Length: 639
Image (tube, rainbow, N blue to C red; front, side):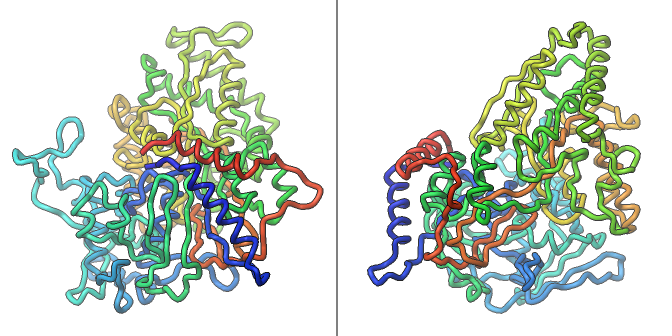
């Protein structure tokens, strides 16, 4: 959904920033334009359909849920009652289920001034998990009673699409089904019933997918309502006043229930994914915040901007993913494909990547579930990961073990060469006749540097890999549709529980980019003589139904063991969050370990400007060059 950013518009923004920063004739500093960048033009900003971190940041400024996040006096991120009056605790019902009863704050309104009621939440949650909506995050509603009935309410065709009646309407098996979520007649109370009291339920209720949307505008234009400011009606701190391919302009929503806490009257989210342009616009004051920098500038930026260049912890994993039905591995058995994927993963020197490319405190990853999550006994989840449960992971990431990893990789490759007869390995350990690999990534100097490194490592063994860099929206949909062989990927937890890294890989999950349980992989019984659905999906279902915390974590480790055995998930490192924040943003801004950025409480001070430490140097770009670069970057994107 990215649009063309004109040179004239960028020049005007840059000029406006320069003028605002120079102050008035009286000598006082004028309030600068609050322009920030957290990514390229988003794939979608529909709360139900979005599955990207940048899109989530836009959404949390435009919508609000029953529960939200804020910082307490100590700076700790905490949950608070947003649309709700208070945070309820779950109570057990007579039939052994659990319910949360939320009482809404008085006089809630949409950004157009119309009344918002409990029924709006009921509608929105059912819409989000309805298979007809096609939301990637539909599975996040599986903690609610009735979810299984909702996802199974349609007749399906052989190709997996929803069947239709002769008149074109959707064909139900036995009528419309709904989540066990009810609104009181007066519209002030919402009752949510869960089969099991999920320990992360309140965090889910704060997630963008759980935020309400306005039924009449959505149903009047299901595909376009979230692209038009006239119909993009929310209930959050801000409302959209302009939405183009170059920027989203958000102005304060006077109807927001906590409007008194919102500081800035206007925020402009500039869309740009060209790292050089981002840095240039930051240096010249056009952008007060950027969420990415040129990879080869990291060391210099640390020295030149020690307080502005920031690194924070994130709950996430950067990884390479393989399509389980990849064209390049056609003709190999499922077992051979798994061996080849695992071999390619072992050839990667993760320490080199974090030290020479990442350069921001990333930690080499020996498993998919991220560090920072805790077991019921208080120990860290990753301290018990790996097939032996000893915390050593699924391969060694110790620098001294890299040679041994490569030897193991070669052994696997030679094994497949012998069993398949499709290629050979010479005495020099170079592979002859190996299929050419196809790797996709999105734009970004760090992503592209990693792709180049992988390309070089594999070529050392005679394995060719082509790299294609795609525009952000195209890239997301290429992965989701399974129209790739190998791709760069990354996942930030949606809440503080390991299941957030595991339930995404069930067969029908909208985030199942690897296509587990689909195509030829669907019938493969290589998991204790079970299919993916019978093994992995069933294990995740057992996790969701389990009431014993210790047993629940044991099941999650079992699920990760199954996942990592495929080799289709190739973890590289555990994330850190890198961004640059201008001193002009004086206070109130914060980010979360989930990757979301919160600007609604930020206070600006026009007298404070970005400035490098005296005596340091970084690559420089003039304002005019920055404007042209930003325009060219946006021109390469498409809706």
